Length: 621
Image: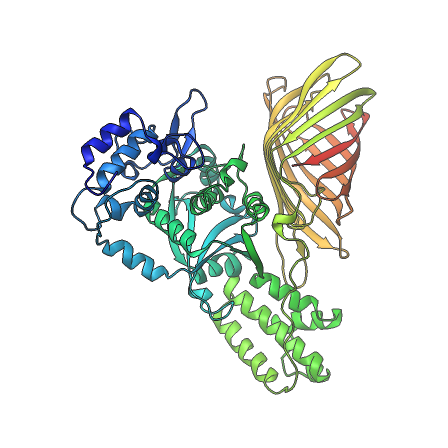
């Protein structure tokens, strides 16, 4: 083809067959089936049949009425549109600069110049030289953030590593949820695709304010090794999908998934989306990016809560108590008790207390009339001490979030329930429980989705579904003199329950709240008040409810995890009986791939005792 090629013959010719010039250099596929074109329009193979369907759900993203399901029709319509005369932001070349650039690399098209003022101003404003993938750690108090969150930072030219990065822009993808939607409604609609997902541009300092300062989430920054041409192509496609709707799904087509698509588009052949099977968890997607050798360097940015906790933990125990007394107004910063300390210890005490007061004034909204005078007094006393450096910043964790265990777990074990021997197979697509290897995960945090436990009883050749966990969340956050987080848990699904004469599979909903206290570096105790509801026709009134309590101990380290305690429930509706249990569960970890597990429970139920033991192997992948 040459510069005199006319539009009509091009489209007609493509609709019949594509000659060698219009085929990719690496394969014999026609151009509309080139993997790069399919990725650019977000096509995925149909589950049934040989066609493709785009994941884009906005009609304005397509130039052909058949573009949603026809890569060929969309390519033909794009070719026709980009060769039309005229200009301005509504021209196809201005609306779809990435498509235009890609097609001109593969076809000999006319090289006429065109003005795109909107796109040109946008790219000039972003002023991007490199791209950094940012991972915000998990945050259990929000359904949208339980697995963590990823976004891209668009870094301007740098004279040094951190210059102007706070002012850099970011690209993120999230559900376009209404501000008044409850957390439960958000979770439901997020799982089943009730929200449109949109791509947005925001300054990085706003992200830090949200994730680091308000939600107390550490940030990991992964600088990608994209060259300038790849960066420009990524931005061109980001322009194409800005404000375009893609249905948002919590487990797969989420924030992390869309960013993988952008990276795949910037560097064809990476095929990061090919790693996605049943779900795309942000920490997993970061791991895939690292494994594909797309990362040059990694930088850790501690949250405000992490920095404050580190400053306070660096103080000796007596001075931690003194810092709490100053912060709560019981001791003045210039009291004799403070002035009696050596200059270095006094400086560190004042620094740590000031950091804590400032954090509480921003994160927990301490009244300004309380926080401001106290902060001023602390700074005034600190200014009187010369020659003492401030406390060190929090050290980078030895294990990053992406270096923790893989989130898909399969378990095989054997056990015995009241003299009935069984073999159990468990599948858990996501994500982590408190007995899994803790490195790279939040201490005391548990989040499991769609876990299935199936048992085969050998004595009577019976296969049973023991439990199907829809959601199980647990947060055991230790309390101390400075922080008083609530420990809580919630879960629902179906489980085997004893009705007195048989075990039936009953839907359940459970929850609880209480406190946890650290007893050492790796050990904490907890006490949680619980409430359970079970629903089944075999229950006398069709349902039962039970208030109760769970008191126990949790130990976590990289070699061994232990959970032990006692539970009690008082079923008060149908059966009116107590259910008491003692339990102990332990996992021995072998790297991030395997764990041996063993658990034992002894239960009194319906005035009889029964024991269960179970042991086997967890495999993570």
